[in-house]
Length: 267
Length: 343
Ligand SMILES: Cc1ncc(C[n+]2csc(CCOP(=O)(O)OP(=O)(O)O)c2C)c(N)n1
Ligand code: SF4
Image 1 (tube, rainbow over the protein chains, first blue to last red):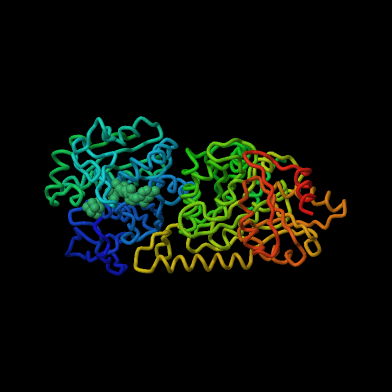
Image 2 (image 1 turned 90 degrees about the vertical axis):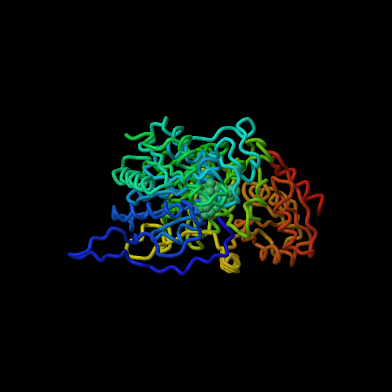
């Protein structure tokens, strides 16, 4: 996240634009779950797209008033400034534990976490593994941008081999820093996980697939099927030191070859 | 009933809807008791993967508006500090139980009062306070755990029960149902889904210029209110005693026996037992200063509450200390000998 002097515009509660009458077909409108405000994300950042997809899915299921979200510590820490439903913060990485507490006492609510790869794959590994292993009926939206955005672009557990970051200035060395973690593949071996899919938001085509995956994940929870998680490969142009277009291309050509897209597990 | 079980029953009676814990001696009976009773009564019990997860599950349940509790012993309570700080910042009520054991480090599993500083001076990061209740019997473990839920809800702040291995393991007959009802209050701030209202947000993050300072001021105002309304202490013969003992928790019982021994031998000896360690009963100590020449603070630590007693006495009397550490428990005779040496 860039220095925080760009103020978010005051929140207005815009309703979804519903102009459909006999002569017009609505193709695109503001989701009721997403405030129509300027956000603080950098140009070309994937977070804004993922926020919108989550909100669209929530609206389509008509569950906005049942949703309780758990925001991470990371660039998306103030997601509640954009989301028009109940949200709590959580300590860095403890997000799935907080979601567990909420869902267990309010099983009729739809509970999801939104986490970065530092939050989920580093400091919060214990919490994600055990929430998955208990088969908590929650949904995890995991935004993998391969770096720690919020704190200035340091290496994340997901950083690719050779990738230069603030803490791996000559590139991640597998011998020194170890290997990038494929969280979904790890979680897939746990019987508690029911739906795991990896998607990307680097192109319009992939965004549509990401949307379908996020909807499916919520549907799993609505149907009480158990633990569902979508990993979204997402651009961080700022700390990849790239233009938004270069960053999108990097996912297509590089990141998604290491982290294969598609359903990892579905039952 | 043992102290750990009584603590659990206090929580059940108080309407605790969610419990998460992680095994650690000497509080294991409490986790086991909750596993049994929470399931029997149709509430939620989770054996968490760590104390970090346990306190954060409690965070979630509390954010969702339910009464929630976690318990542990000293090393596990250290891990909970992050979560406790977040809960204060987010103004979420909960009850945390610490059945203290010897430290530092892994220490041992014998009783100790080495976590006083951690409990009353903060423990986690940021400017905050917890209501800290120190029971000294199995009955009080039940009663004060019950009370802690009401206080936590009232102030939207975590409350801590500071026990120790001796109290937790001790068996005593108790009265379970006092007939007192828990004081449930509305929680319009809780996350329930935003049906029929605007979204609720639970957060401790305040980024704007001066906004966090305002939030801190609001928290401090609550702490002042707690200081004004929630101080609890027991005093014995403090109006006319030259020597006043100060002790809390299980040690207070031993100290009281020593005080009685001293009185039976004609010594003007009294005692103050702080029940709330925070807010600390400064006034009771100040008042005792009218007659007392000397105070003797007795703890199972190197002298932690001692500092608060000294602050309250403020130079008006001499303050002595007798402490045992690392699982050592002061005996009646040891304390009595100290009293004799002071007289
Ligand atoms: C206990 C703790 N440690 C460290 C931090 C600092 N911190 C804030 S965000 C963050 C990493 C965020 O990275 P990621 O989860 O990948 O999310 P992104 O910002 O890339 O979206 C860290 C280390 C913190 N807030 N709390
Ligand atoms: S993830 Fe990267 S691009 Fe997005 S807001 Fe954070 S720093 Fe900027």
